[in-house]
Image 1 (cartoon, helix red, strand yellow):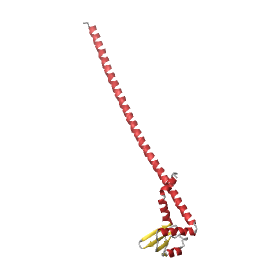
Image 2 (image 1 turned 90 degrees about the horizontal axis):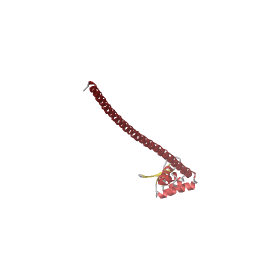
Image 3 (image 1 turned 180 degrees about the horizontal axis):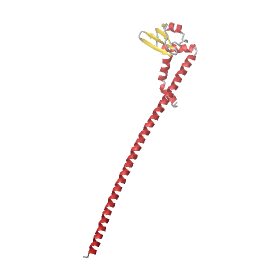
Image 4 (image 1 turned 120 degrees about the horizontal axis):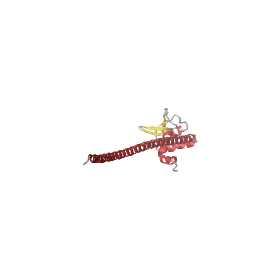
Length: 188
């Protein structure tokens, strides 16, 4: 074999080997790039899911906070409305005639079956016919006065019957709270 042919054959083998190595490295590079692109896409998806979950949690937290603020404000408004109702009842009671006013207390004393005891008036009470009630129900009038918007307390031994305007209005509201709530919510 001639030297030229050997060189030519070696050149051909060299080019073939170079081409094989080049193709192999190109394939490895393409596989590496594909693997890294896949990892990048998986990482992006994971970050998207994580961000979406975080946003959902923050949205839920914000919604819960807003609902809590709304309910607190609603409760404050309802409480104010109930306080206004109580004040209106108190004003109506105070502005009623002496006859009507005393009839209310007489009905309350009858309901409680009062037969004797000590009557303690509130500081603001000035419409009750004390002499009439003391005589009819065998009550003694205390020199002391107590806090309140009207009415009185009857004490006998260990028994205390609170017939103050504040207590009666509070009991009236509590007894009718469901109906009041329905009115406040526009259900009636």
